[in-house]
Image 1 (cartoon, rainbow, N blue to C red):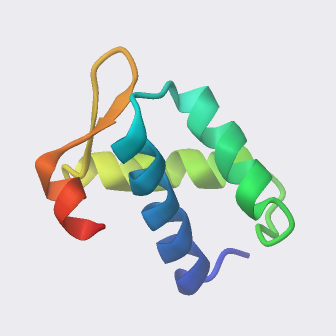
Image 2: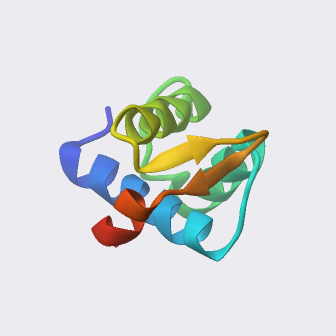
Length: 78
């Protein structure tokens, strides 16, 4: 199970890596699993991270243009 605290850490981590460069979804998932792999106690960690990306996208903090990039609203969160 992923706690709210871990979800927040994943969100901030995604925003930070996207602030540095444009990334494809699979790259983001790989980086997050490398960073938080042992802390994510779900059957499908990649789905957990993909859901976090969807939440960020729904909140207009990241945008998808053939890959993800951070929006000005996302930069304000960091």
